[in-house]
Length: 195
Image (tube, rainbow, N blue to C red):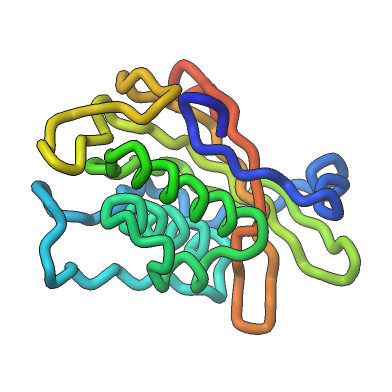
């Protein structure tokens, strides 16, 4: 995710999958607000996370977005949802982002809205089943706040105006279910461009 947007790098062995994917059927096309957090500041007793199935790549993709929201809102790099739905470069990237937010004194306050999640490709590199899951992701304006004051404040490199993008996650089937391992982001003007 570039200066304004979170970026998850695609690991080198999986880049070939992105280039040679075979179109697959859709799974779960409803609009999803994956982050169901309440307004205001985080409390000592956290709201339970919704459950997203790890046996379905689209559900695991949505679980990842929910876990990232909760981890970036609480500034907790060890949020259990991160390892439940993520691994490798995706997990390392988010933990690095949380450390950066802590150092800047900002935290995520509003969740991204994920629309039209669907399987957009699949393959089997090195014997691992891999699906690409594409979605339209909208970041609301002023989605970050100052940790101390609670007032809107964008992290370094962001303008706080919100973005709409096409996010493609590389989902890998492991023994315990689907995990996001990498992905890429492309800014778009509207969700209709994601189609």
